[in-house]
Length: 107
Image (cartoon, rainbow, N blue to C red; front, side):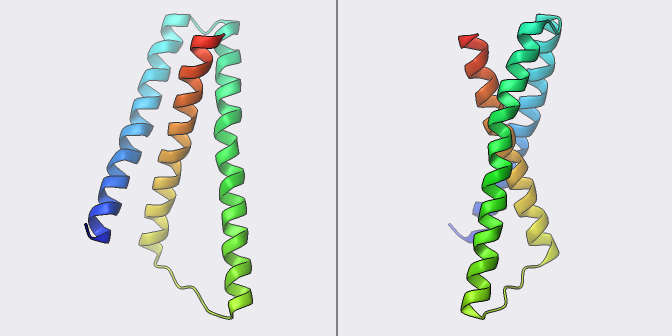
């Protein structure tokens, strides 16, 4: 499989996870009538998703340090960066969706 096919599949999965999480969350919010239990579930799931932000910060820091130490310049196109950002949001929304499912069953 070439690189473009992999990126297309990852972007499609990111779109699915993002839309699926927001639609599922809206349906459950109406069903649970936005009670205190649901707000607690949202906060705990959001805490899991915030871990993805820290992973991104550490990964960016490691890449910057590695490129500084090796003395090589890394050039990435704006389109490639926007695709990586979309994949990141899909991954973050997947983590939040998993957190929502987990905490809804346990709380």
